Image 1 (cartoon, helix red, strand yellow):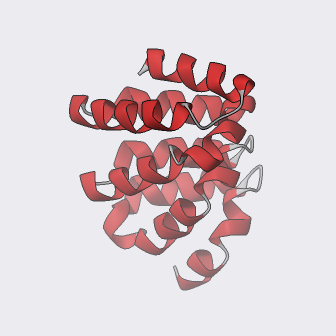
Image 2: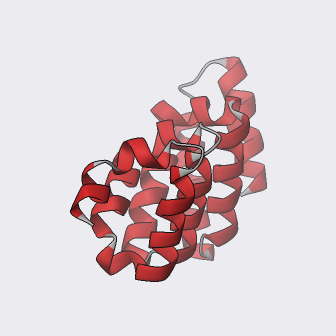
Length: 136
């Protein structure tokens, strides 16, 4: 487990290695795989925009507890980074998954946060954020 944890950032981006990480997350759970999940959360934006690792990010949403899910959502919906996700096919899938699993209260909180930030963005980003707010 230590070897996998230490190399999890590389493994999660690999076309075959991502399946190993998904299997570990499913079978061993978030308590044992916490170090791997922590690496994923710290790199959630870049991992969400890649074909293979985005699947692992989505799998994390399925298995993590409320506290870790909140951390993931906070990182994903950071307005300085969210425009990159909105422009990316895989990033969009991850955002859709996040919205799907969010509680009603989390959706309200994120919506309010994004509405405050919309005024400080360019017109293109404003349109993307506005669409995202409508979806939420």
